[in-house]
Image 1: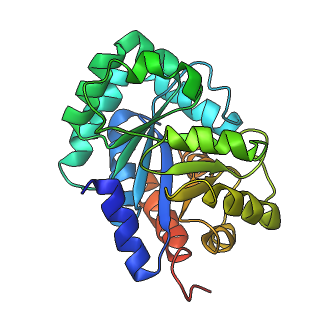
Image 2: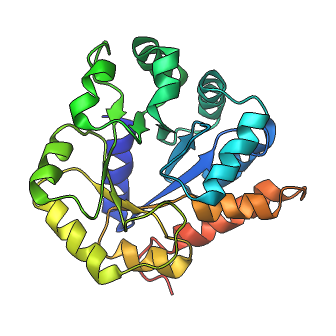
Image 3: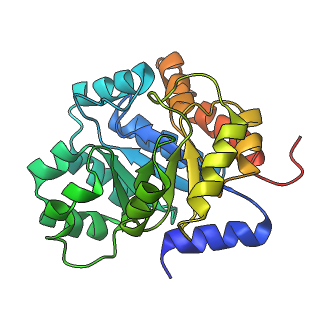
Amino acid sequence: MDRLKKTFDRLAEKGEKALVGFVSAGDPDMETSLEIIRNMCEAGLDILELGVPFSDPTADGPVIQRSSARALEKGITLETVLEMTRRIREYSDIPIILFSYYNPVFAFGARQFYTFALEKGADGVLIVDLPPEESDEMTGVWEGNELSLIRLIAPTTPVERMKTISDSASGFLYMVSKTGVTGSDGLDTSAIESYVKTLRSVTHLPICVGFGISTPEDVRAISKMADGIVIGSAFERLIENHLEDDDLPELLGKQTRLFKNATRKGYV
């Protein structure tokens, strides 16, 4: 049984939802980033989305754009991110999803990416800008299906399209809570509940909701309807606001603990 399935099954038995945390790999530098991730794992993070820095992150808001730029300035590449994955595996069994745009994977080589990602300990990949119709040039050269392919579902996606996307996915589905980019404010929980209900009618995969979730109260609200909650900009905003602080990794651990508590029944 793979790490993702084990995680969702374990959490379901405990009545908890998955806390999925995104950080840009190498922000603000490789060693600090690794310490941040270690503290987040120790604080209860359930699934790690490790962002591959990219020069044109069109789906991301300004906070994650700046985090990606800081990592690129430090020379972080896809190769670096794969090495970071290996180092995280030395102390944690947390599922790791490599979050990327397609260009870095294309330049690296899709076949080589699949092999190296598994060798280093990754569990899945989410390619933001690669729809199902164009994915075969990547997955068609993979030498197996051990790397989960996480798919995005937008709130504007018709139900027939939801099914098409879901049928090509594995691991879990990432339900975008709203139109726009990451980090934008405001959550319409009734609309999100409707999106999730529709998506459940066409898939048996776990559903994680992200975009615009920034407080424990947001996490608690989304936990009532989804299997997991994805948080990225709130973590990266905390990093950005404390770049010069020696206790930056500990601050991320503390925030992770607050968010994780909100995924548990009885949290107030």
